[in-house]
Length: 58
Image (tube, rainbow, N blue to C red; front, side, top):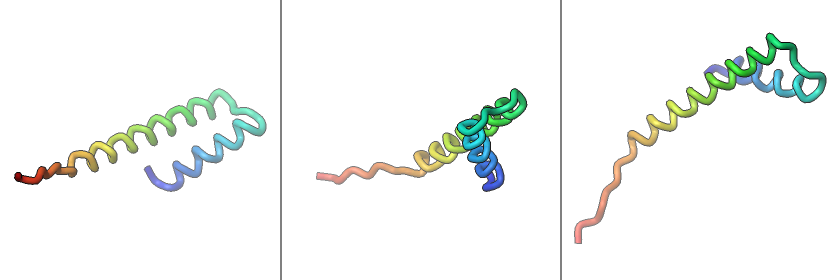
């Protein structure tokens, strides 16, 4: 997710608190949030896949 989309999420969040959102803006906000969450999960899974557990031999 690029910085422009993150900025747009923040803009919509601020507008929602101040004056409310139109139905179109609510749909846009939901889509952007879903994309952000999906990207976050994907990145987390990739990081977890790189982790190797090494146990000490006794």
